[in-house]
View 1 (cartoon, helix red, strand yellow):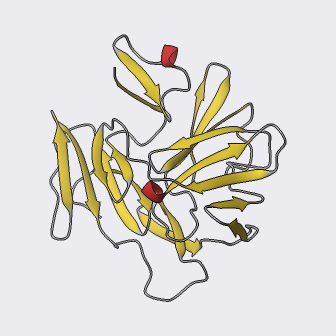
View 2 (tube, helix red, strand yellow):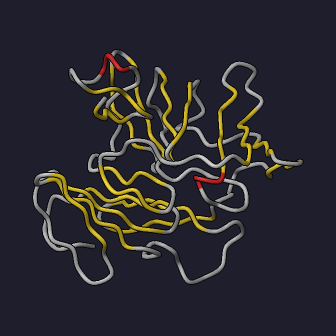
Length: 210
């Protein structure tokens, strides 16, 4: 981990990222960016265990330690044909009902309950409901967020659909690298534009400038 207190760290794509709202200093193997005093640093491959795992590894940070598990544990296999793939039983924050959207290499879900939340998800209350963000969602091969355009089927609950469509990362308050937005504030803060301060709009849980 990085020196000093106040870092908020998470795992995505085998990389370790840490952010803080004030000035912070990186270290060997870290690439950092700043906006004013806010700091975000990323260490490529630092959260990828050396042992092989079916479908790779998926992890989160708990009490200053990286916890990793097999990425596809508990998921149905991808069913692919042509330029599209379907994932039955995609990841959600919990077994409750959730409405989910995604983009910029992350998933945002909204629901009424925060019971038995998967520790990989970051959740906050908002407007009588809960917002939860997954900063490390699954993708078919190649596991590159920019190579796929994915949507959750929340109407018929059939699963999650991904089409091979190049999709650049949108406006991002942080670092843009490896097809993801590595934000200064990884915890979600909006679902609608109206949840954001004047002059900002909501993009996949993040209030960004118009």
